[in-house]
Amino acid sequence: MCKSKESVRRIVAPILNVFVLISIGFAFGRLTRPQPSTEKLPQKESTEEIKESIVVTYLHGTMRCVSCNTIEQTLRTVLDEFYSEQMQAKELVFREVNFDRDEMLAKRWDINSSMAVISREREGQEQEFVVLHDVWTYVGDNEALSSYLKEQLDQQMQEKGQLIEEVQP
Image (cartoon, rainbow, N blue to C red; front, side, top):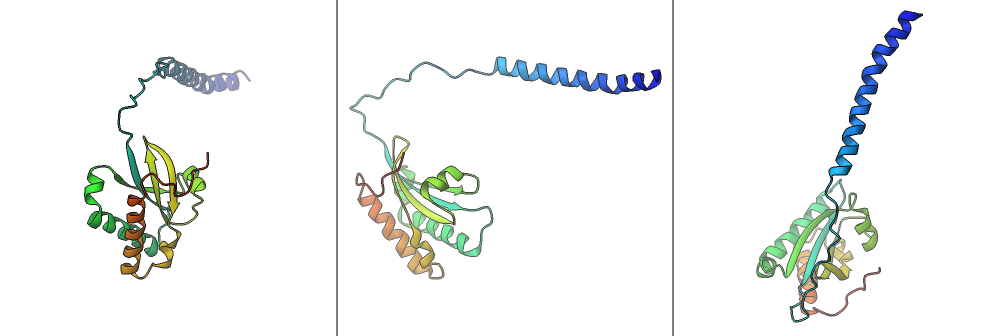
């Protein structure tokens, strides 16, 4: 009986030591982690121009089909061919998002399949958006898809300041 207690002690003691060391490491890490600043950031003067940009987001799932890739490639081509100046000036921004990983964004925009969304941001905050549901109508006809995307982008570039769809808080 004495030998079995001793063997258990030999096994358990190192495990407990490792547990204690890990616990101390976590506690020390929490104490030394930088704390968020409570200092208020300076307010921008009202004479500064408010930075507004149009953001084109291509949302896709983890598994992508040929049609999904075609929509994204056509969108990128339209942006490169017709809006390169606006993209360089950051008036127009492209981003790609996996909606399986960013579920909150997909839910806010009611996205459940690959889709393009054009949103307007002011000072980094989304103001309005439009979901381009018709991209699927034009898959298989690259020219029609390109025309549709360009038409939608032109419309949004011209409508700066007008609401597309109000963002729900």
